[in-house]
Length: 455
Image (cartoon, rainbow, N blue to C red; front, side, top):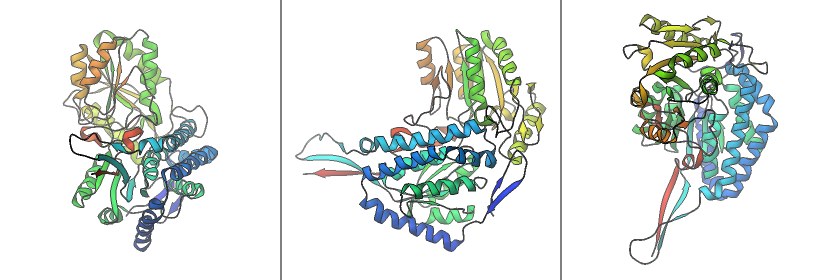
């Protein structure tokens, strides 16, 4: 049974509980979304839907403090980062609103022979199910709902059980923005009920951001029922340092890439792969920088990291570090827990025989490696079941592109971190998932690319 509740990770106190949806209510929700697609979606224009998305963006910005406070108590996100997440979400809605006509424009096809013309027209599929995680409660929804509501699809949204208050706040924003009943429906559904939703013939696609386990289960069900699926399942992103003319700036970037959202980000840098010539000075500076950061009160402006999102998350991270050390890793700094807070931690000596070599650390734990040159760096970077994002730092422009081409990942950032933006596609390969969100590609997943051939 899935339990929806707000439990403040700073105190462990359960603040509010929300009842799960009944089977009858779930049936009504699906029917409402289906009716909205048959009616409103078919009759509205791209421009009209774009105007509603602009209003959604405005409401995110006008309610930023209220919305931010919600996720501070739901999952412990530091308030500054909570506000930034909401502002980024607003930017995503604006991006799709501003570029809707271009993204959905007919695409003419040059015929190889014969008379007449041909084009591809993008139209909506119907009702979509979104299954979203707790780590970015507003942003994850924006990158799924924004393009799909613009297209004319309607949304059933199952949020993480620990984010029921933000889930309700998002649904209210869509209502207040003027979207009709059924266009966006929040459902406090159990995992068993989600199986029913995926099986329903009125539901035409599923997007999930979450764990490999959840992704495997959803992909299996979606395949069984012939539904389109997009999966974003996490990563263990490499941060490769081959050369630098400013080691302090590179270390600052490494710290930012590891500690964002208290280290609980799918595309955070997690494995730091450093050329042997730079390894010792990098490790010393990186360790010192992480030691200077202490978990703080997430409600206070300026706090860099807060508690982990829950007691269960803290338990998992502590267990990973304990096992890593038992299997031969060295704790250079950190490795301590207080309540649900975990100190920034550096591990070295992680070999391929260690479980930590192939696991994702979802918290402020960094694994640092020394390698001899570019080839060894790329080999180590690719020796992972994941393939979401990656970072390459080098002063050699040709090397940067060469290494970017060789990395098995959906995204490569060169000499920059924290550069995610609404126009840039997000997604991975291997066990990091399938499909893309954001940018033009994010508006190209759940559409009927209809060929129209005219004689």
